[in-house]
Amino acid sequence: MRWQRRRARLVGAIAAILGIVVVASGCGAADPAATRADIRSVNAWGGDIASEGAPKHGGTLRLGMDREIVSFDPTVQNANMATFAVYDSLMKLTPDGTAQPYLAKSMDSPDGGLTWRLGLRPDVKFSDGTPLDADAVLVNVQRHIDKAASPAHPYAEQIASMRALDPLTVEFTLKSPLGSFPVVFAQSITYGTLGVIISPAALQQYGDDIGRHPVGAGPFRFVEWIPDSHLVLERNPNYWQPDQPYLDQLEFRPLPDTESRYASIQNGDVDLIFAAYNQELVRAFQDPALSVYYGPGNAGEYLYFNFARAPFDDRRMREAVVRALDMKALSASLYNNQIVTATSLFDTDSPDHTEAASQEWPTYDPERAKQLIAEYRASGGNPDFTLKTTTARTQFGEFLQAQMAAVGITVKLQFYDLAQYSSQVVQSGDFDLTTTVSAFDAPFPGASRLVQTGGNTNYGKYSNPEVDKLLATAASTSDEAERTKAYQQVELQVNRDLVACWLSRSYLATIAKPQVKGIDRYTSRDMFYATVWLDRPSQ
Image (cartoon, rainbow, N blue to C red; front, side):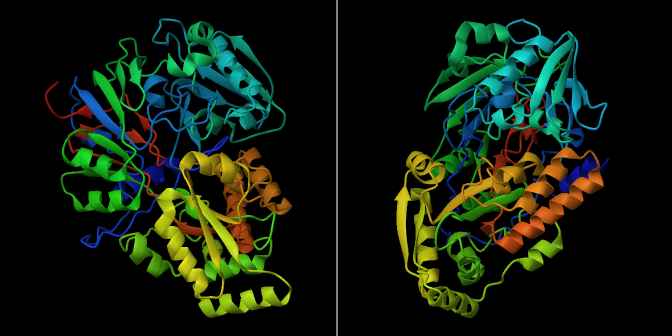
């Protein structure tokens, strides 16, 4: 299978938001003392579990998160690294962007993607002892249909009807064929998923407060959550996978300050951190006492152009910005000379990438930028604009301001805290140019969110009917070759249109002490915890 071949390459070489997931892009100031660490894809989808030895039972794994959890309710938009510890997922993404059964036993279509049948494993129970059956799946999917704010609502809306064929089989009939439908049962709650199933008994007991009282069928069960302090989960003794999980407990700690988070793993306060920024990754690659799990993924760090207003409703101005940015200078200034460059929607290791798209990307050429700006001025336009971003991107804002001044554009800078930025800038669409990080594992629905007309992270309001048609073809077909061709054409067209100013791939990484074994992850950092173990005595 293609995904097996690609996983072998990824491991051997060693891949959000969304109501809204806009992660404040913080590449970090350059470290003068840093030496080259050669950021590269390494164990992107987890370690080589079979070669790590016989797992040991027991112990507590301490994990440092880059933000506090908002909720364990998958209908509430947030990033939650503990999700799959409590719930597991019905399906699981593969490195080629498709999905395979995980908590579910099977998922197939008898008619080319219009009807899908989800088969469940027998005797799987939630941690409260109630069965995970077809009715439980129906109750959970219906919540996403009913709640328009759910990040999975756009996918749930594709369902025309659903029913239980028997206690272990759910049939979904869609409004139109969707060959990629299993993927929406495999994503994290960050991007919207139908594959996280909550105990119906717990839903009845807690109602809308279920986000504070999670009950799933994952490897661990909820014990305690003190916001801004810690979350404790303990081993689920009735877990569906025999002999797993290996750990007794997980303790998650919110460590939003980048320096403090990295110091916590260096000094042993935590065993693993979910890293987000370039400087963390550079340091970790330099440190032989740490293990790195990283894949650049697709999209990454980029600038949103607002297509709905001047000056970036004019392609000349979009091209001028791209040509005016000296990426080598940016790398030296803010990325420790180790920027993971991006010139296209899909990573170069993706089968959906085409080199033709990268060849379309404008190169650094300030003289050409000046010509385009002069043409724009001559046509009556004003090239000056405002960059709105987060307080974490102050240095980047100043860098961009200086680069634009060199070609004759005056840039006003406005900075916001993350909450203000999400609501007042991105969600409202009130910006000329803004920053974001939006990495994704799978082309569906990741690409659609970014570049489809009305996509839920298409904040620049880009619209191209041809791109919409290609995205629909890619999502609907069950033919792998046809799907790949469609996505390659999408990538080519959005680069021709300059839908965004690509800066860098993301730096979403998992950094762990070497005694942490059995890591199984997505490039988005979401982890599956049943296989994780500690190569040290039980605590």
